[in-house]
Length: 292
Image (cartoon, rainbow, N blue to C red; front, side):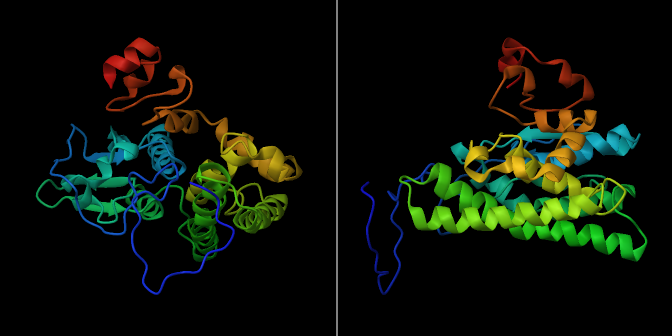
């Protein structure tokens, strides 16, 4: 595909299945399932269907943090959804999330009336309220945490779908979209850095779901784990974001959560599916392959 120098939108948009890009084979302008496939259900009340993308690990971090606090009811099964293979378009997954995006959570605490929760931010709030953790109950502090959580939900499309797409995944590089989104991402990093200069965590003095939601996105960026764009964006300038990221990524529960449903990188950092705490002992490549 050659790079266009100019583009005039047609009167009516039509879907070009061969439009290029890393995810062209799974993107489409219609909703609904493409095939029949039931979701597996394990032994725990909480059933998570996900992949270790930034949105996916938000929830596994939350679940591991809840377990670390002693909430036994947060035990969960984490099933791998390979989005590059279209698992998110199976009929069972679409029933759990009509938007066909990971993660999706099914709560079978009441087996006669399972609860579905989709959208990562909604899942974090649901679990925080269910277990009474990582979300303050007094209104000023609660408002601050929820505000930063919604900030992340609203800004992530600029970081991932905008900058990440045009910088790393588009079939060719174009100056205008890369510059436009790079400017916005740096502004967002500055917003974070200024907040973290005045506060240990995003919501205040306490670690919360706002941090769990934001660190997998912006933390991965400043740590050089996303798009290999650290030098381009000069992320070393954001010293408070780096301090906060290191503080969060060093938490044992965060380390475990970032492993769950991970299928890339070092084999020792992958746990394709998680059904019990002992599954984290499956670290070698041969065991991981056997467990997949």
